[in-house]
Image (tube, rainbow, N blue to C red; front, side, top):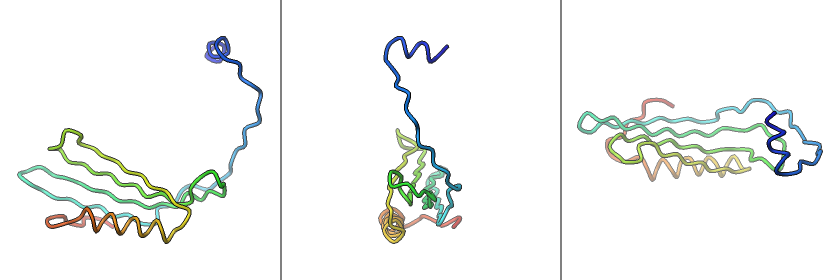
Length: 110
């Protein structure tokens, strides 16, 4: 039924879709920091994972940052960076922590 609604508007060609058989992604590195000011708890999480992809159309490594602050208008901010180089993604990870983590932040999990 749903496909019929689409095909009334556009034509869908019968294309062979390439599927990729890959293993689950694996977390390579993770650090979580917290800071409390005036009973408000802020949290920053940093991750690197390997995608285990053999496709040239998909990155090998992903850096992901989550920044939660209840006092901001935009309470939850996320940032993603990708690379095919493990050395480069680890540098992105360490540079981001050097930039973000200043006085008062405590490492709670790595």
